[in-house]
Image (cartoon, rainbow, N blue to C red; front, side, top):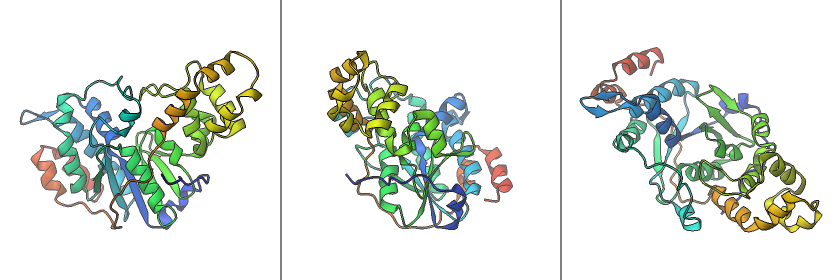
Length: 295
């Protein structure tokens, strides 16, 4: 597994000065759109998630003209992380059938938008994004388009993150406010606190403030565990002593993969037959939006 870039984030205004690769977290937007438009149908077919996703992309694309978009897609519920810990994401409900039927349409929409659409069986969209960050860092400006807190660990020199829901960039200061540490230490904090949304256990009883303080002092979970004897003899130390195995496993679960074998050839994304696609699904309002955004 290759190492992720460790530098702090640079001025986001520089984003437009080099070739840009926008890495889109498709799954996150897909679920958000599905619950935002739960009852939208056309010709008796559910199209709410598809519609909401397309609205978001139409508003997003003009912000990054003459750039490349890569759509990172999940390929299934079960990944290599389930081999490490069978409870990984076991707390999540089954994907609704009404959304399952729209996933192929959303992937088709990505292609109509001109995005390079990528999935990797056994891995998650986050791993695809992390791999491209490692693969392309230094030669391209990379812009992660997501609201997912897990991807904040990728922010670094030449690597920005844009949250369309808030219509702003996520900065290193935002990361520090959320996790109490800089982006390159987010993984170690998650290893201690766990992540309830993904059912990653962490160390029972250790909260974000304690985790951030320990990682700020010791730098990593491994170094913290190696220096447990330096911690005050109290309940928190006891919890860590009892939870070292869980901490190490949780770090492995939360760690993104940077070594997938993924295709890449730079090319500016250009929409192709998008009006016909919108018309086919009854999205007349989106045809008007295309004119507004000059797509």
